[in-house]
Amino acid sequence: MSDIVVAKRYARALFEVAKDKGIISQVEEELKSVASAIRDNADLQKFLNHPNIGNTVKTDLLKQIFEGKVSEPVWNTLLVLIDKGRQAILSVLVGDYVKIANEALGQASATIYSAFTLTEAQQAEIASHFSKVTGKTIRVATVVEPKLLGGIQVRIGDRLYDGSLAGKLDRLSKALV
Image (cartoon, rainbow, N blue to C red; front, side, top):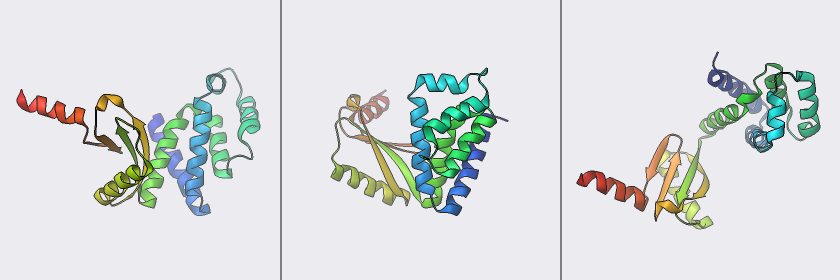
């Protein structure tokens, strides 16, 4: 079975447990923190993915790092991933969990790309506008992308709303050709 399918199943199961316990958002934040900690530490990644290191040793190390700092559902998910040798799918699982949680909570994550740093008020205004467009509560993250020249691009899921100057110039160029 492909890792993508497995990650979705694990994410769905974790979401159901989190929903039953009423900790959907908490589990999301904990998953992101755990995935970030592992992703940012190359030695830990190598250790967890090394085929000659036993699962017990890997679990013991994860206990030292995460036990007591994450909820029971997240901890149990980590244990299952290690036990099944699927620790490499953690980042995919996090993405799938976020999608499932967003859908269930009527939320969407948006990444705003702009040529300059946006103020909180500008971010709130953009979130409000796209909330009306999508019918969902928008959670925003911003990225400064100087090559846009001006304007913004907003990515929500697999849709890109391009209101950047670079995008407009590109569309104008294609129209003229």
